[in-house]
Image 1 (cartoon, rainbow, N blue to C red):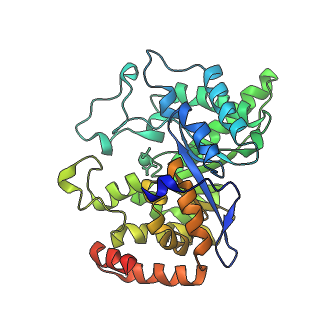
Image 2 (spheres, rainbow, N blue to C red; image 1 turned 30 degrees about the horizontal axis):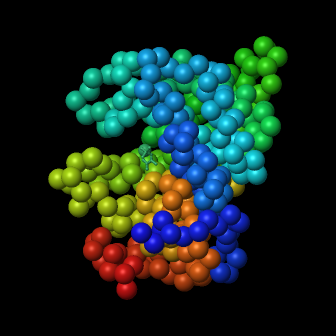
Length: 322
Ligand code: PEP
Ligand code: MG
């Protein structure tokens, strides 16, 4: 495909009228770190820590997690590395963790819900590794993101956990630092509360894979409802718009790390919706960077307004093809 052929673009990019857009990579295994750097990603916008828990019989130790995160930081010494805390449950199962057997796992205990409750121990171990990594060489680029947030109390509890882990490390005399903290916006609740989230956090990152599933009430893995699971549905676009607009008046930056972010045909729309950062699989980084450079932000905003006014996904697609 055309995206495979695009040569790496190593410098940072801005729109034709000078608005900087960060183009980062999603990393879901150790093997994806080097290609992300080679393709010219401006850092890692989503480091999925689940992979550290797969294909083994027990959770990784604090030391192993520290090594994995510092390896990612070393690959991007000048850039941000956004590490997502363990996001299991729903579609992401880990056999030895004995996750709850629920009739509606996507509406059950997943992500931050497990970290603040039955898997608090895993969360604290992970936070210890992350706060230590934040104090390592290049660690100032580290950012930590919480998955599947739907309540402000969760963000407050997660921030308190960070504080208490910092106090514990201080008492032990262990080097540590508190990284930037953010939340994924992948539930309608988080999109509706984005203004309050942005007040509390350093950044938000829209996860369109789950956000589309929850806004449209359409299982991300069920082909029978694939026509509903479309991030270009106006309802999903409105949730993204609401999130980006809520962050716009604050110091928080707002990115996107769902699949939608990696489609160069959607870059203008996403820039127009106000996203500051797009994170995607490494292969599409050069094509999206090239696309950003051609965009005029005022025209992009007009396009976004037109898309938001469309009544159906077909109309949105027609607009983008036109
Ligand atoms: C998302 O939900 O959009 C996302 C980026 O997270 P994941 O696909 O890992 O659930
Ligand atoms: Mg998700």
